Amino acid sequence: MTDAGILPEDKPIDALVSASAPDLLSKFDGLIAERQALLDTGVRDPFAIVMEKVLSPTEAIINGKPTILLGTYNYMGMTFDPDVVAAGKKALDDFGAGTTGSRVLNGTYHPHKDCEDALKEFYGTDHAIVFSTGYQANLGMISTIAGKGDYIILDADSHASIYDGCWLGNAEIVRFRHNSVEDLDKRLGRLPKGAGKLVVLEGVYSMFGDIAPLPEMVAVAKKHGAMILCDEAHGMGFFGEHGRGVYEQMGVEQDIDFVVGTFSKSVGTVGGFCVSNHPKFEVLRLVCRPYVFTASLPPSVVATAATSIRKLMHAGEKREHLWKNSRKLHQGLRDLGFKLGTEEAQSAIIAVILPDQEQAVGMWQSLLELGLYVNMARPPATPAGTYLLRCSLCAEHRDEQVDQIIGMFAAAGHSVGCIPA
Image (cartoon, rainbow, N blue to C red):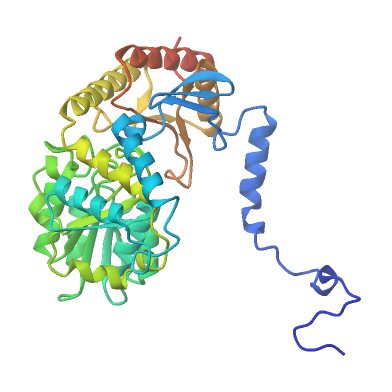
C-alpha cells in the first residue's frame, strides 16, 4: 500500500500510464510530417536560419558567406547606430544586466521612465507605457480595455497578438473583411446600443505590406460610438511628417484613442509600448496583467530605445531614402513578372506571392545561395493556400544593393521557373 500521490518504487512511471493515454502533441503530426518531407528533399529549413555574424543593418554572414539582409524589419537601420549602441553600453555599466522585477515592484529604473518620456515627445501624447515586447503590448492593452460583455471589432487579417489579446480579455470578437469599410460599418451597426466597443486596426499589415484606409474606418467607428486602438508596429519611423505612423500621415491623430507599437522594427531593439491622451490611462499600470506580472526590460534595452526614438524624430532623409528603396524594388520585381501583394509600393514590406510551397521554398533557397536572405511565409501565418516571400527594406540599403537584389530575384526566378526566361 502506498500513500496517496506517491508512486510505488517497484513500478516505472511509464508502466503506470495507460497505453491509450493520448499524446497531446499528436495534433501536430501532420505538420511534422510535412516539414520532414520538405527537409528530405535537401533544402535548408527556412525557419531555422542562424546568422553567424551581423556586419551591419543590411549584411550578415550566413552559411559562412556574406549575405544581404532583406527580411529583418530593421526599417530605419538603427541597430548599429553609434549613439544607440553607446547608450546601451552606458546603461549596462550603470544599472547592470537586468531588473529581476516587475515594473510595479522593483522593475522601474530611470531608463524606463526616460524611454516613456521619449515616446511622449515622439508622439506628442500625455501618456506612454512600455511593455517587455510588442506582443505583450497588444496582449495587455486589448485584454484590459475590453473584457467580458464588451465587443472587439477587428480586421480578419489582424496579427496574432491582437487575436490573443481578445481571447485573454474574454470580450466578444467580431471580425470584418480585410480593409472593408463597408463590412466594418455593417458589423458595428449590428451590435447592441450602449455596449462597450473597441475597434482594432493596423496601419500596415505585415504579411502583404498593404495599409488600412484609416480615415474612412475611423469615421465609421466614431459614428457607432466605438473607441479605437491602432497598431503602428510596421508604420512607426517612416510614415508621416514625424514618423509616427500611417495614422499621422492620414491625418487622424486626434481621433485614435490608443496607439500600440514595438521597438523591434524601426527602433532597432526589443520591447513594446502604448501611447494615449486618455485621462484615465495611468490606471492601466495597476490592472494590465501582461504589464504587472512580468519582468521589465533590462535598462540597457530601454536606454537604446530612448536614444533611437529621439533620433527618429529627425530622420527625414532616412525616411525619404527608405521610400525610394521600396518603390525601386517594387517596380523592379513587377517588371520581372513576379506577382506582388500590392499594386504599388505601400510600405517597406513587399510580398512576392508564389503558387505553392515547392516554388516558395525553391525561390527562398535559390536566393539564399545567391547571397540574399528573405522571409518565407506560409499558412497559418498567411491565408490558406498562400505562400510568399516577404521582403522588408531598410533605410541603410545602398542603391547598388537594391540593384543586386533585383538581379538575384531575376536569377532565382528563372532557375526555379517562377518567371519567364
